[in-house]
Image 1 (cartoon, rainbow, N blue to C red):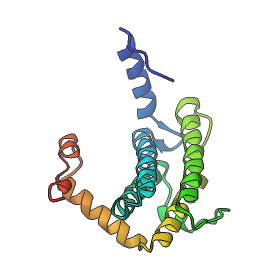
Image 2 (image 1 turned 180 degrees about the horizontal axis):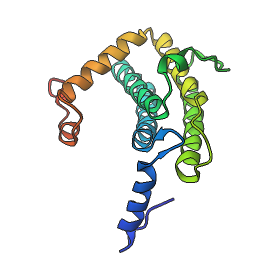
Image 3 (image 1 turned 45 degrees about the vertical axis):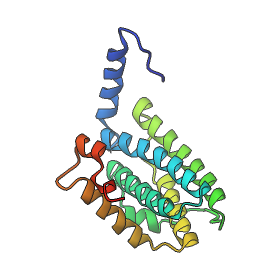
Image 4 (image 1 turned 90 degrees about the vertical axis):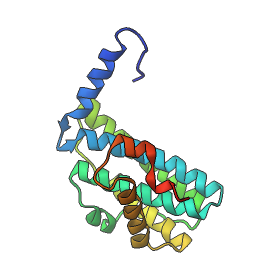
Length: 181
């Protein structure tokens, strides 16, 4: 659904806002929407970093991707540890570009589940796409020789520096963690 820029545009945005804000089938709509958009964004950034062979940003984008997956787990009331240990029929391939293709497929599955929950109220949260995304990211970490816990710790440190008290839009724009780069 595209939003039109008409005098009624604000009413349409308000209606979508109300839909997203409600809790549907046990899913926190705001956290779920934030997680979904973040996952899509990080997939694009990770793809760019891989195509540019930029090891620093590959590492950072994997950490950001994991953060949004954790947010999706919180929104859907799933345990990230349980998802990481869930058996998903995936062929892990030692080719980062093919892994991006697999990530894209799983993000599309996640998008479909989100759409069905938010707009049609007809599906319950599903763990499979999230479990597959976690496993694919773990496979990328293995490929590049990154420790998953190191990536998570670095991401936590970055976010703590960016948001010392709690999230704020001002801090999101200011990005204090980028000042010394």
